Image 1 (spheres, rainbow, N blue to C red):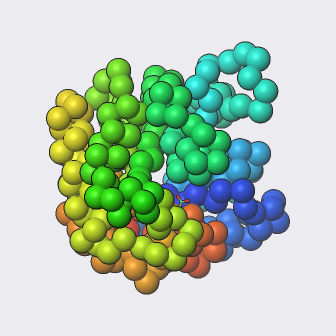
Image 2: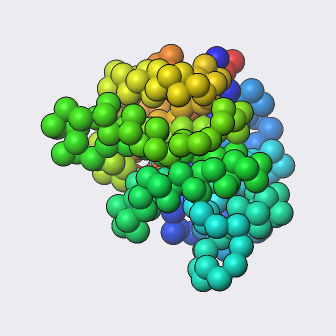
Image 3: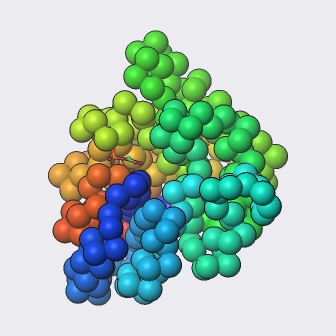
Length: 251
Ligand code: PEP
């Protein structure tokens, strides 16, 4: 069984003051969480160091994105080398908002994922279908293609995680049912196996309107190894509730 990961994606939210009060609240409850699961937050890039300083020791701090290049004239980009140098624990790649709003292609996401892993960063490759793709019955094909293209020329790596995030469930309040999510997670695990990756020990997280009141059902599924959470990770009380649920699953 894979270690359960509960990761928050703060997107472009939270000021320094909000970050400080979030940290104050989670610091006061941190010792109550099971140490069997892993918990992390990806804030805006400019808050990475502050979160690292103020968050409880043991909270993983991650980037929401990184560049496909190591260094150089790439204005506005963040290098995986610099993230590693700051002791940042993980990065997301291929989040659907990057794919949709910034037109990131599978090839571009593959370069980021490869570079991040080569630099020793735990890397969460995000995949997921749109509503049209689900309704036309192409979920498995889309997700498998994103996995195959995103992992092209990448050797099996213990620092790789996958997040299945159906686009129609992100920030919409519509969650995939545990059965729907489990079906796709099983397809992803099989695909990882077919590609020669360490399928059994690669955590596959579910993301898409996960909240304290629906996480337990999702975590009961055999192929769901945690959650990548947007909106509900912004409030410390909700994030702690999600972490508690994650810790229980590993108990
Ligand atoms: C996300 O941004 O990765 C996400 C899953 O968002 P939400 O939980 O708000 O749907």
